[in-house]
Length: 422
Image 1 (cartoon, rainbow, N blue to C red):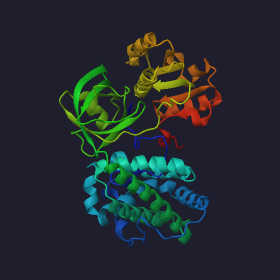
Image 2: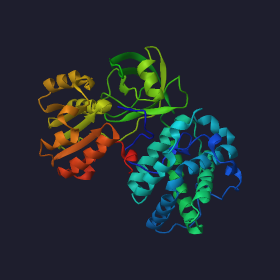
Image 3: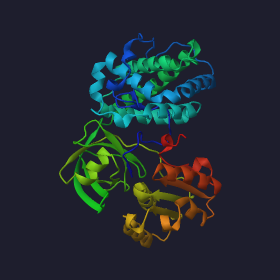
């Protein structure tokens, strides 16, 4: 599934998200920042080994959330100021970002708001940040870069959180950031022992299924380990330092090839390049695999899968994974699109249905209603594990429908939690 508009991809959990090179995501180019952006002296922020005595975790979460609630109305100015501080004080970091940063606008505060909702969930926090730390290796991130980011973050919050900021709040932010950065640093160091920072991947086929959707098959330059349901980050030669997330459209193959489904979206630099410009022989760059929307083979629960648009890609991979493990549990796939024409991979899914008697594929177009509405016409689903992939709005409504159908939250899987902050 293509995620040209996302940020993070990923990932199943959502926490304080950092951008390329250990930077908090979001914001505008420093040239748009207020002239006073460098007036304040750098605040003190300790390195990874903070000596600030931590209070109860819930107190830090309360203080962080209080700050974010205050700065939300001035998000644009805060992110501009943050990047101005970061780049002016550390000009060497500017080269790690894309030349045009407009697509990063608003992502810093969105990531922080998401973080605030999950600060009390240590397992979720740790899993996400470990994936993020491993992924940041492809940007050339070094452990020494993290304090600079923290200083810029604290400096920006100090300027704009004028009513809630005090010594106790600053200490909470320092502790939070120190914990976050250390988890990422440790994960990157461990990953460096056995995996490259990135892979080169040659385009071996490019199948234009519709004027806006392409199926792209890649041959990586060395083995690329991943699980069905996961995704990769991808950089094209036409837009250096701009990475986007795309799900794998098949389970791991014996020949090592990787297949992605890409939809060109308005103003999507990477997606438009992959759909309209990429050709066999072109070489792309891949980051490490990530995501937790994978099949639990220790249970015999049925699988209920909702795939909207190119979100059918990881759903197809999950079906193949079940087949390869010899499972015979029921798999129900609801494949949604605007029209029959947009069901670009329906022939493949129907062939799989003919091959595997335990698989049911139900195409749903807008004329027939929304995917969540179609879901309610079938069932019961209480004994199923649910998987969702597609537009954020579909996932949000799908999660609500699945909960209403009796599926516990811990058995509903998708990799867009970071996009679901209201």
